[in-house]
Length: 239
Image (cartoon, rainbow, N blue to C red; front, top):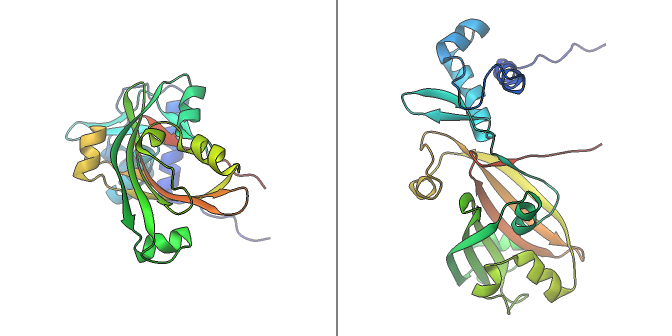
């Protein structure tokens, strides 16, 4: 028999804090134990404690106030499912009213990176769409979207104010089939801090997402930055 896998110390701290939150020992809006208390309890470095709390901040369970401490969020977080749904569908299902601020909508030549993502030739025209997605007027995510112009010449400013997926399915007569995504932590830029009114020292999650139609064609490539205080990414995997 092989040796049992050792659980990393930061993961042990994450699990400990989550258990306290779910058990009610750390109430909503209340501070968790200080870094020094966690360092002493688990006999670890400050870096290890900060890794655990940063992960929970990015997942939406904790928030950090500069100079004040780390607190349990108010649990208003909306979970983002990995099932392929539009933002509009997700918000309506939770009883929230979705809305969209269009920051940019223009046609640009594709660079090499985006051309590879869309499986097109470098320089081909693409839509560059940047939208701030809201629920009940609360910013949930900043979405930057890239789509091939040739396939969807009728895409317009008015159509992207609503559900882009709904327009695409009606236009192509194909369904949205699957979405491949990569999740990475980032530190918020000044732009993100301005949109989300978040702490610049608190990491957020960025989702790199490629969506496919039922005919196997690539629909789009999207980069999503999630407001961890309000909108949580959740992955459910089966075997």
